[in-house]
Image (cartoon, rainbow, N blue to C red; front, side, top):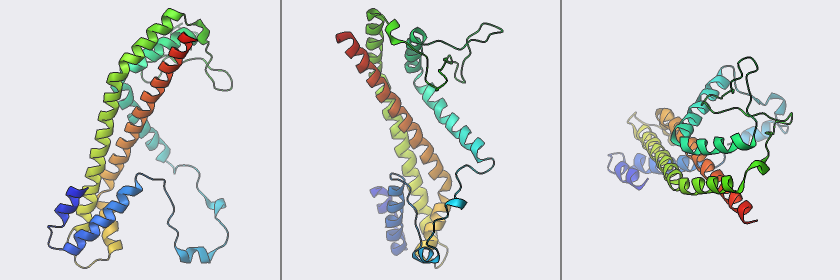
Amino acid sequence: MSDIIEHLQTLDDSQAAKQAGRVVGEIAREADGPVEPDIDPDRTRETTRTGFSRMRTDWRPGESVEVAGVIQQAQGIIHRTFPDAYLVMNELWMLVREPEVNEDTGEIITDLYGWPQWKKWPSGAYIEDYTKLTSRERDDFLLRITTGLLEWEQKSSTLWLEAMLAKGRWEESMATGFVAPTGRATVEERTQRGRTFAAEDRYHAIFRAAVSRSAEALVKSLERIGQRLKDSLTA
């Protein structure tokens, strides 16, 4: 971020550069925190009743399909990055769960990524029994997970780096749009112009951040599974 500010301060419009640095910094921090509404004080005087009856609780027509596609792309990156992790887990599940089977062909039903789909209780929980695991199998899975974590943690760190680089590119685009020469403009007008200019980079940064968060969650889950296997062996 400091490199961006130093670059902006070399521009002729030094005031715009300073404003850009402040605004971009504030907007960059917004991406790391929860979304909070910005309510105009005048709006609070117009009504004393919240508009829950008009609140939209679902995606607009067509948006749900688009969002599902983005989620699928993010999940695809995780599956392609950590194929060995999913292999270990599916080998373990094959011992403790029951795969769904096509009654006509007798073949195991698989998901989008080629892994078996597992039977569930009516509640939605998986039908599984971990007492089926022998001590030797538990020891084998523990060793494979423990040694695999070295590579999985590095891959997760790489995805985090990509997310940070995407965020940096978004900040640069926002700053470029903010200081673009268009005559006299207020800070609010420059900010809106910067947001518009950097919209594509912003969504890319959000996408990469989501992928990084998913990878981090996967590695943490594997760590917990490894710890539980270790506990079961020493119990």
